[in-house]
Amino acid sequence: MPTVPVRLGPRSYQILISSGLLDDLGPQARRRLGERARRAVVVSNTTVESSLGDRPYESLTRAHFKVDRFLIGDGERFKTLRTAESLIGFLIERRIERPDVIVALGGGVVGDLAGFVAATYLRGIRLIQVPTTLLAQIDSSVGGKTAVNHPLGKNLIGAFHQPSLVVIDPDVLRTLPSRQIRAGLYEAIKYGVIRDRRLFIRVAGSIDELKKLDPGELEHVIARCCAIKARIVQSDEREDGLRRILNFGHTVGHALETVTHYRRFLHGEAVGYGMRAASRIAERMGLLASPDRKQIDAAISSVGSLPRANTLASDDIISAMHRDKKVEAGRASFVLPVEIGKVVIESDVPPQVVRAALKDALE
Ligand SMILES: NC(=O)c1ccc[n+]([C@@H]2O[C@H](COP(=O)([O-])OP(=O)(O)OC[C@H]3O[C@@H](n4cnc5c(N)ncnc54)[C@H](O)[C@@H]3O)[C@@H](O)[C@H]2O)c1
Ligand SMILES: [Zn+2]
Image 1 (cartoon, rainbow, N blue to C red):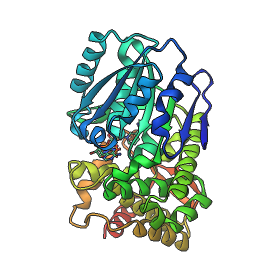
Image 2 (image 1 turned 120 degrees about the vertical axis):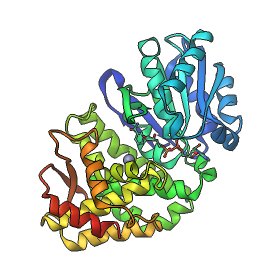
Image 3 (image 1 turned 180 degrees about the vertical axis):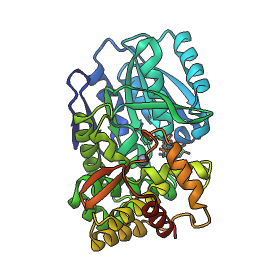
């Protein structure tokens, strides 16, 4: 089975990737956690639960876990301290102890919230991530960032807490709406541009197979994306430096999400526009050759059409960029490709370059 190790000393873990793996969740969890773990609290939502049925619960029970379920509402608006608090109340009532485990079964919303609770309940208990969206399988379940939202901003409350195991079953994506699949594919393109030209070419050349969820292709791409993320996290676990390259496309992407109040774009779609903008900035600054910029554009277009963005005011987007939590000393920084597979971080982009690139990118 494709396995990606994440080497972080005592916090090391493995990412297991294989079709049908969901039925093996219990034994895999048992192998990793040992006999001391008696109870497993599965955090999920009703959408995921009705798609996947009882398989994960049955598998955990067969491996002698006493299983409880905690379902949260479906949507970003439930990723809050209030939901976290009610989950913590549930854990206290069920007398969940340090050797026990929280299993996050869902997309990034479930993963971030369950991860945040695992990081804070009893100052930290073990966590297994079972991501069920493409975005969660290639991005949010790996690397240990957890968070909940505050009314004044997204992901402002959080902690680093690495999972003990990540169990990825690409088969579970069969019930995921196709728009969510496409949104995940933009992040796969991102990994290619920042770190791996071969992956970029492979993803760009197999978008149709990936959209159809071809098992072999999907497994390969998920494993490669996870391996890239693992390598980056290994060298910069807490985002002091290199890890920031994962934000390619995200400076503008986050701003687009903010100005549309998270309603118009899925995150990956906003990143699609963000990558268009960043590669245009790079091209205008003479860092990226035109053919490369066009190749990046072509890959993004081949995923499908993005929701319209040319009705949005550049001024609003630019001011949202400057309010982002990643801004330091009032400067928005950009991850800019210098070739496909290599990026630099630049916090000195002339405002007129940003403006022109943005206008062109949002057409
Ligand atoms: N921690 C990190 O490093 C990190 C990285 C990127 C994003 N995130 C976070 O991830 C979140 C977005 O995650 P997401 O895109 O997975 O969204 P999501 O969790 O909201 O899932 C998208 C939708 O798909 C549904 N769904 C999930 N699995 C399904 C399945 N197998 N079949 C049918 N429906 C299914 C969900 O119920 C939801 O309606 C954001 O909150 C973002 O901040 C975190
Ligand atoms: Zn992202």
